[in-house]
Length: 521
Image 1 (cartoon, rainbow, N blue to C red):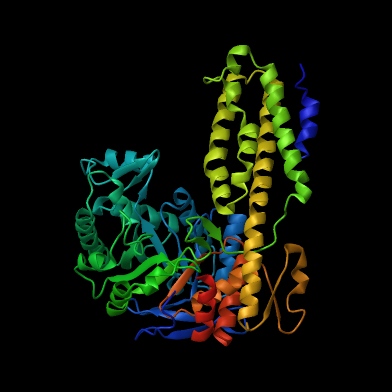
Image 2: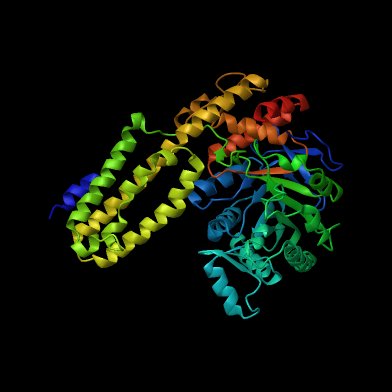
């Protein structure tokens, strides 16, 4: 047999026009000294809660790993960041669990943290549990597709809130968000009026939660408030009209804002609703923009290991292709059939190579596709393979090496796709550097260059110079209460701290913001 265990053991080792600087009556910045920094961090008051938060908050999306993401959260807390944003659906609850574990082991007092979580997204597991409860006929949620459901009824919010409290290891949530109510419009039987009625029912339930002290306040998180022409558009004035306790309990709204998505500050009705009702706007998705062309663009230019002269990528493709050919030649003929045979499932080398040009164009989309679609399918097929051939040691060895090789190929593809994003973002970073006199020159460093920190006056080492500039642009926008941004790595926290400190000492002027906006438009 050509599948030698020694051979495969060896193979293992190869392996962004805006209304700028408008001031609200409550839009005043206060400061707090961070526990380990000489300069204070800018903060903003959440008026209906009468508590202040740092202008940049820890975004818990995709935060699951204690060793890295948990350590980054601890680092953020230690440096004075006191706003944490997560959601029940983030990594199927694992983000909340990580945050709960981290806070419980931290010496930071819970009352000094503002904790925001959300509910609305559901999975098969949630639906099974809700249906078993027998408390409803099951007509209060909709099936989107596959394992994706959505519901915003009081019953569902009560269930999700209870789980969030458990995972976060706390007896109260500061702000509880109804997440993406626009998804309810994806049902063929739903109408926008129905959604606002559902929201009214849910707000009344949440009012009881405020009265009980389970939550301090609530709000809505939506991606479509700026998209008035969209079929799933959610109108903030209509949302607020459905709330009985608007003056006291509805305290915040969360919606995207970045260099390429600034429509909300141009929307007079939206901004008037926020200002008139003393709502706290938390901006999300600051570094993952949807461009006017409809593509997703990451706003970062950190260094990343790239396929050297394409050799890494080429070798990774060759390795996977060779493994696929080897296995196909060994399997029984019936398993090689294209109509469902096990062998026909292991053709990722061919599929990915045929789509290489497309995969190289959009870093975020490529990363999402590989991690959310390719890898789960790969693991399922390999599991089926092992069940079928568990008694053939060489096949088991092949499955291990094939998975390792595929993971390496996917990593190379993610790095390859970053090349185009990096070039565009380096160009944008250079334009912003020339356009504005920043407090410091932002110098990019790698993980091996930490000795650069503070090495030269007027020079600020940072992980991603474009990120630091983008965050300062958002901080200068007075309409925004706080920005929640991904900080899953300590270096991401460092960039956020640099942005806040530079904004605190030398905020961008209205003229500078207008100049920046002109080049973005």
